[in-house]
Length: 130
Image (tube, rainbow, N blue to C red):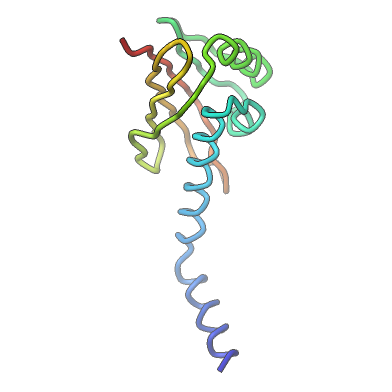
């Protein structure tokens, strides 16, 4: 009986590989949300592509991972986060959230792609809401 149950479970997992993709996507979304809410730069940059475009204060710039870490250190020192709420997640290449900070609310657009078994962020856009 237990053997049949295990065989059934293995067959279910093999036939439905999307189970793992959905869990990975959920983990990615949760990690990004947590990273913004808690100013956790180390976790955030592990998802960055080698170069990332960051749009902030009406200008866009390409940063390496090291440069982006410096950017986020400065950003979070000035804008201390209290909450990050995901507004939209198309689970393919786009995530939209509101970042509540000591200096106001920012709309945060995150563009990413799947690379192997992980997700890589290509671009982050910050637009201060008035």
